[in-house]
Amino acid sequence: MFASFIRRLAFLVAFGLAAATAFAQKNYGPGVTDTEIKLGQTMPYSGPASAFGLIGKAQTAVFAKVNGEGGVNGRKIRLISLDDGYAPPKTVEMTRKLVEEEQVLLMFQSLGTAPQTAVHKYLNSKKVPQLFVASGAMKFADPTNNPWTMIWQPPFQHEAHVMAKYIRRSAPQAKVGVLYQNDDYGKDILIGIREGFGEARASMLVAEVSYEISDPSVDSQIISLQASGADTLMLGTTPKAAAQAIRKVAATGWKPTIYMTYASTSVELVLKPAGFDNAKGVISSAYIKDPSDPALKDDPEVQAYLAWAKKYLPEANPVDLYAVYGYANAHTLLHVLRQCGDDLTRDNVMRQAAGMKDVVTPMLLAGVKLNTSPTDYLPLEQLQLMRFDGTRWVRFGELLSR
Image 1 (cartoon, rainbow, N blue to C red):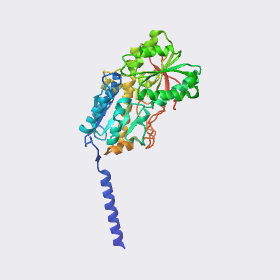
Image 2 (spheres, rainbow, N blue to C red; image 1 turned 60 degrees about the vertical axis):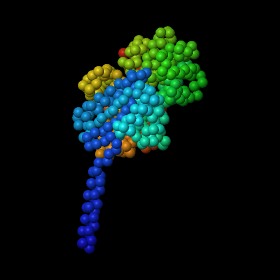
Image 3 (spheres, one colour; image 1 turned 30 degrees about the vertical axis):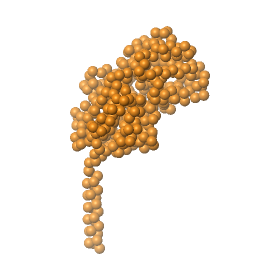
Image 4 (cartoon, one colour; image 1 turned 180 degrees about the vertical axis):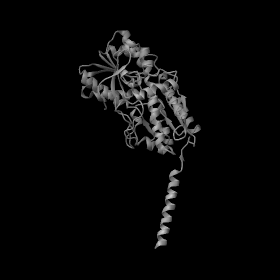
C-alpha cells in the first residue's frame, strides 16, 4: 500500500512538473520573437483625411517610450505604420503587404471606415486581428460574423443618437439640417440621428445633404442646408469638411447652432482653420481628457501626458485631441499585450481584447471604463457633451450613453 502511494505521488509530481513546464512555454504567433512584437497599421498621413495622421504619430511615440523602458514583458514593440492616403485601394495593397510580407501579429488602429471596410473580410478570412479600428462604424463591432475585428471609440451611431436626444430635449422646436459624408461613416451618423429624434423626426429633421470626401469644398451643401430653413446644423464629417462647413456658415451670415462629431474636434486642425470666432458655440462630445482644461491642470494623468508629449512628440501641439486619442488607445493595446503574457498568438490577443472588465487606461474621462466580452465588441460607450468657448472645449452635463 505504501509502495502504491509512492507511485501515485511520483505520478502526481511528474504530472505537475509537466503541466508547469507546458504553462511556462512561450507560444508565439507571426511577428513575435523573444525580443519583438511586430504590429501593422495604415494611416492617412496624406490626402483628404491627413489631419488624422497625428494619431499614428502619437501611437508610435507611446511605443518609443515603452521600448525605452524595456518594452512589454521584455519585448520591444515595432509598429509599421504606412500612409494609405485614406484611399481604399491603397489600404488593400498595404494591408496585404503587412500581413503577407511583414508577417505582423495584428493590425492596430488602422484608420477610416471606408479604407477598413476594404480589408475587413480579408483580415477576418486570414484570422488576423483588426484590433481597435480607428472608426466608430457598427459593422466593425460584430463578433458573430467578424470575430477578428473590434473598434475602440464609442460608435458613431451612439454619439449621433445621444446628440439628437439632447437636441430633442433641450430645443424641441429646432429645425435640424444634417451634412454627412456619403460613405458608411456618414451613413452610420445619419442612422443615429434619425433614431435619436424618434417620433419627432418628421417635424425636427428638415434636410439631409451629403458630400463626397473627394469634393474640393462643401460650400454648395451649406448653401442648400441654409435654404432649408434649418436653425440647427449637425455635421457628420471628417476634419477638412468640418472646418470648411463652419467657415462657410459664418461667411453666409447664417447662425445655426452647430453640432459635430468627436472625429472633428481638433482645435489645431479643425477649429483654428475654421476660425475660432466662427467656431464659438459649436457642440460636440468627449470621452477623453482635454489637456487644455484648467480643471485638469493638476490631474496626474494629464501631467504625465504633457511630459510625454514634450519629450516624445515635440513637433505636435500637445493639447490636440488627436494626439490624446492616439496616446489613450495605444495604452489600451499595451494593456492587452501585457495580459497576453508569453501567449502572443492571434487567438489570445482577441481573447484578451474581448475580456476587458472595467479597464481604465490613461486619459479617459473620469468614470469612463473599457468593457468587452466575447459577445460585446464595444469597449467604450460613454460620452459627455462639450461646447467650444472660442478658445477651448468646455464639458457640460453628465456622462451619457445610448
